[in-house]
Length: 263
Image 1 (cartoon, rainbow, N blue to C red):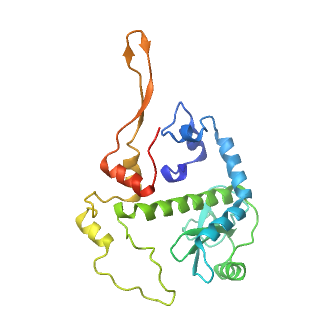
Image 2: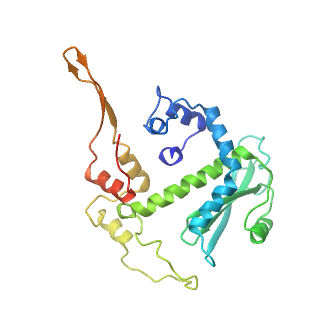
Image 3: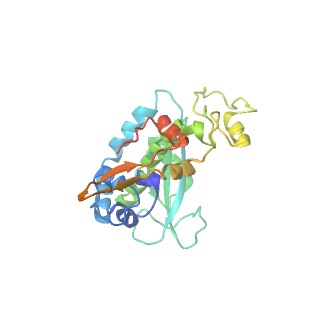
C-alpha cells in the first residue's frame, strides 16, 4: 500500500510509519507504528520466500486455459557492487560502468501482472528469450533483497491495476479497455470517439467531474484528514476523532472502489 501511495526507501517508509513523523494513517490502520527499517527488510525476506506460492495464486486468478500471455524484459542497474545478480553487460539505461540487472514481467492479455523473474546482467537477450520459452519462468541465482523488492513492486502494480480498472470513469483512460478480444484480431477496430478521447477533449467525465490522472486522484483523496478534536467543556476535557467531509469527487472514487470511509 505504501508503494502505491508514496514510493520511497525503506528508511523513509519507516519514518513515515512512526507516530512522531507519520504522514498518513496507514501505520495506525495496520498497527505497525513501531516498525523500523530492519523489520521492513525482514518482511521482504518473508515475502521473497513465498513468491512462487503468491504468483501461482495470481496466475489462477488472471490466467485461463488457452489464454494469451504477454512477456517482455528490461533492465535496471545497481549503484553498488554487492548484488550477485548485477553483472557487467549491455546497459539499456546507457549507464557506463554500472552493473545491470535484467528482469522480465509476465502478464495476461489484459495487462494484469502475473509474475516477475530475474537473470544476471551479463546474459544476452537471445538466451533470455530461450529460457522464457522453455520454462516461461527464469532459473537464476539468489539475491533475495533485490528480488523481493521488485516482487513487492509487482504486487503493488497488481493492486494499482485493479484500482485503475475501477476508477477508469474518473481517469484519462478508456473505460472499456479490458473488454475481451479474440487473439486472431491482429488490428483492433478503430474507435474515432472513445470515452478517453471525449474526456481528454472536454476535461470532464460523463458525470461532469474533472478528469484526473491516477496520481492526481490519489493526491486528491489524501486531502481527507482525520483530526483529533478536543473541546473544553468547563473542567471536563473530552477528545474524539473526526474525518473531514469528502467532496462529491472523493465520494465517487470511494464508491467505484467499493470502499467505506470509516474511522
